[in-house]
Length: 270
Image 1: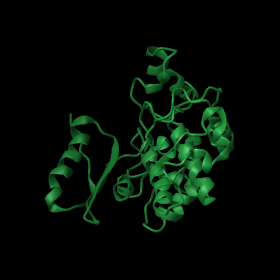
Image 2: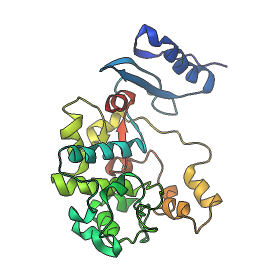
Image 3: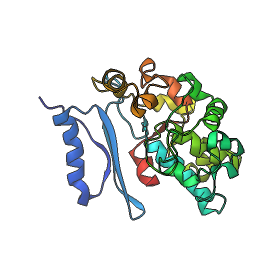
């Protein structure tokens, strides 16, 4: 049985097929709520949304609904750091320790800035046990990373820096600009270009936050139930233990690893 849904927003006539495909996600594939946008030649050719922002379907997805966008936030952190490169304040081929002296601990004195962008720093996780609550404490995590020994020789191979990338790049931004990365983004990109995207989510915007609907088998449960306990995969995704905190827990609004936006904001950033 199909589910009728009213798709709101603007679509250039040349992009009607995309709007039809978006609508089909709801009517044939049980999408609950979403937005979609394309920013082309300095203008939006499609900016649409529909459905509901909660699984109970009591709140409509509106023009300004925002959602947690997971690793899209890595792109945003990279853009912030690359602004400093563009300004000549950050050198990709310089050692990280030039800007962050404490980082030189545990044999990292020659680790290059470019390794932080390419997931090749050998710092995808933590040897020291941490909690999700600890992720709110920027200084604590930065101190742990500064002391962390790389799990492999930096620059030799790549391993997804799922959580640490935000702190690594964010600390460079903070050391050079004097601003936390969320403030740097807001002042350098968000406000000047009217982009409704947030690294962490201020309380005043949380009423527009859409709920996430997790799959029946979450990635965290897969990691704990199906992966080798000695693998990098397990070491990264089991510390902190994400099984203990739901995707919609407000704590994520206070953690810099999480970004919040909608299709309009992400498309404009791209």
